[in-house]
Length: 239
Image (cartoon, rainbow, N blue to C red; front, side, top):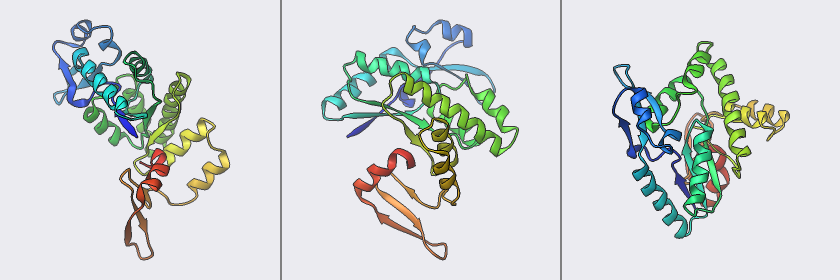
C-alpha cells in the first residue's frame, strides 16, 4: 500500500510569513529555511510561505502512523526543488519511516499549467520560474525542451540522493516524460521515437482508480473498469 508524502508540508498547512521577503526569511527556523517558498500575490507583491515546524511535525507523525498501520511505500506530492526531497528523505529517517520514498515528478508540459500549479500546491519554485518563462518565449516546443532538461536534472539529483525510483505525473501527455527517460538513459532512443510515432496524448489514459478511457472508431470513447492490477501496473507512468 502506498501513501502520499508532502516534502514541503500539506498546502493547507502552508502559511504566509509576515514581513517583507528578507525579514520573513530571517524569522524562519533552520529547518523552515530548507522548504520555504517565495510567491507573488495578486497585487504583484512577493511573500514568503512555509509549513511551520509545529505543523510539519504533526504531518510527519501522521505519516509514521500510516506506515505503522501497514503502508510500505511513500510517493511524494510534486516538488520542483530536489533539495526539498532530499531533506524529506532525511526527515523520514529521523521519524523512523524506513520504507522506500519515491519522488513524485510533475512533468511540465506548458508554462500556463506551471503557473497554475505552483500557487495551488504552494511549492518552492523561486529558483526556476524565470528560466521557465524565458524558455516559453520560444514557444511550446522550446518550453518542452527546457522542461525535459529541467526534469531530467531533478530526477538525477533525486536518484543520486538515494531515491529508489521515480513516479511521473504525466497528465496524460507523454512527450516530456519520454524525453526525460531518454535523457536519463532509462529508455533507448529507438523506444523513445517509437512511442512518439503514435498519437497517444490524451487518447488513452488510466487513473489510479482503475478506470481507462479508450478511443474507439468514430471518435466515441469507451470507459471500462480495468481493475486494480492494471492500474497498479500503469500508474507509475500514466497517472
